[in-house]
Amino acid sequence: MTKRIFRSILTVTLTVLVASLVLIVGVLHGYFQDRVLEELARSTAYIARGVEENGMAYLNDDLPKSSRITWVASDGTVLYDNWEDEASMGNHADREEVQEALMLGRGSASRYSDTLSQKTVYYALRLSDGSVLRTSDTNYSVWMMVLQALQPVALMMVLAFCLALWLAGRVARQLVEPINAIDPSAPSEDVYEEVSPLLTKIRSQNRQIQRQLLDLQQRREEFTAITENMSEGLLVIDQETRILSYNSAALRLLGAKAPVEEGESVLTLDREAGFRRCVEEALAGRRCEELLERDDDCRRVMANPVEQEGKLAGAVLIVLDVTEKEQRDRLRREFTANVSHELKTPLTSILGTAEILENGMVKPGDVAHFAGNIHREAQRLIGLVNDIIKLSRLDEGGPAAQWESVDLYGQARSILDQLSTAAEKKQVTMTLSGTSACVRGVPQIVEEILYNLCDNAVAYNRPGGTVSVTVEDTAEGARVTVADSGIGIPPEAQNRVFERFYRVDKSHPSGGTGLGLSIVKHGAAYLGAQVTLHSEPGKGSTFVLQFPKYVP
Image (cartoon, rainbow, N blue to C red; front, side, top):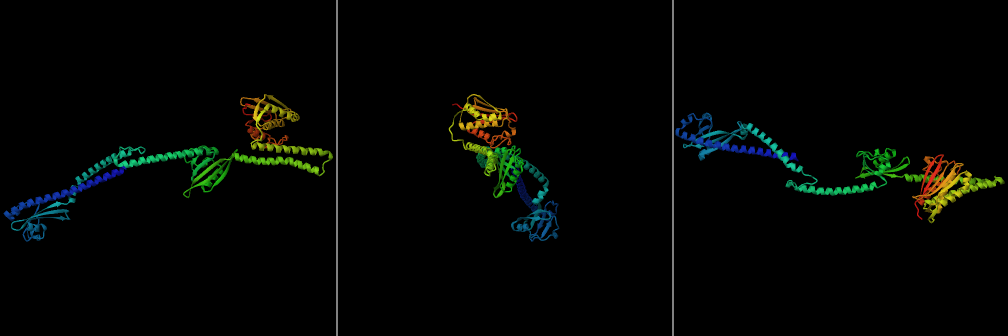
């Protein structure tokens, strides 16, 4: 803006300066022409008086030849000329100034010489005898005057140009300085009146921008609040895979750190082939889904292309944590396979024994033995089905029984009495210590939990081992501890022993179904209790069952 004002002021100044110079030269030229004509009239009158008194003798005197003097007869014949030979000069009757003098007594005229770039001024005066006395003098044209005064005029123009430059720059800065000092966020009124409409518009736009910024800020906060509270990961990228937006869930699920630089590629968050394939397919305009498996975690990535005005603008990636779902599917598949296997084993044994008996291939003395096999396998099958039914009931919310106060000490004593025969066969010593402790629960479920813990302690013990059951009433609630000196559980299997049909040693002749600890886990969860395990291979295992505080 300063340059435009500077150029405008300089242009106007120079235009005025040139116009003034032209006007002054024109006025001076006219003034000098009038002065020349006046001088010619006076000198002509003076010479005319001398000619009328002395005739040709006056003209032959040494008159100054600065001006041309011509004496013309009434018929136009040149009688005398102080610059030229009058005999060689033509008739002057047709000259404008001569004709005017013959008619009016005096006349004047001016003629321009292209060769000399000069203009000659003529003045003629009629004498008493009818002849005409004419004097003339040169009057320089405008261009000749300018050329003659070129040096001072050029110097004056240079000085004027420099002055115009300085003044234009100074004025331009002074004009623009208050405008440049305007604060766009809060324009003041102490500026030029001409910019007041502009300042009014700026203030109006500032208010509108503030409203829009507040609206955008509110929407951004709402969007951030929504995305940050999503359990699903969200990533928005452009065509160049640059990250435009993301939430913390996406970083957490991908196990990545926040982008260090703005516009970082999304491929830096995860370099797995499945993730890269999702990004490439989405940016190619196709929807894509991939399952990313890492250690025990499973992530499902869904990528969708985003179009804007019919053109591909980027993609949106959703990252879901499907670990639990995949684990459930895996457990369901394992459960189905294990149930099939566990049911098939006793049924196969029963079927084979029955076929042998049916075909009469058994001696009469061995019938009882084979019948006993059928009975044991049938009992095993019934026990397996009962355990599955118990787990199903616990999964569905537990049995339809009333909650009541249960004495854990008395329940533990009853269970140890039931297992005494099995303990004697295994040469395992069982002890019960502690005090009476009551909990609120379903007696049937409490019995199942304690029975399975004690039964496992006996079944997986070593000959001459011990099983210690301790019942305590602590400030946190009733606690039952079942410790054995058996084979123990390896650390890598301790997180899986509560899974259905999982066995640490499948070759161990315990005869169990692999559902005991699953019933313990689900039963404790139903009663609000917690089960913890401490075990060392070869030293035994300790299960702690912590019930919530109960006040009868």
